[in-house]
Length: 91
Image 1 (cartoon, rainbow, N blue to C red):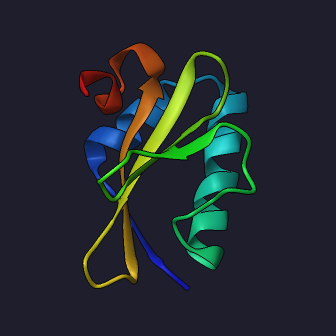
Image 2: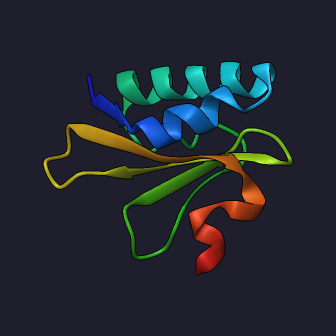
Image 3: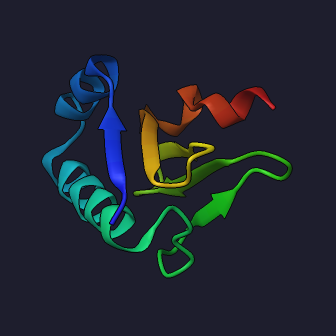
């Protein structure tokens, strides 16, 4: 089982998301907690090449991003919100 960290900033962003996307994110976080950060069973999942950053599109407009820690037992959800503002868009 993995520990999941989510900052207040991310929690506030989640509360601003539509209810359906919040529910999908909750399912995704539970799946990560039980099975680890690599979630190839989710459609629209990907990992950024050369990084430990993972992302999954919850819908056309909404995305979640998370990173693995070096200890390997903690996963931090670093972003949840619109895909236009997603941190991977900077790469």
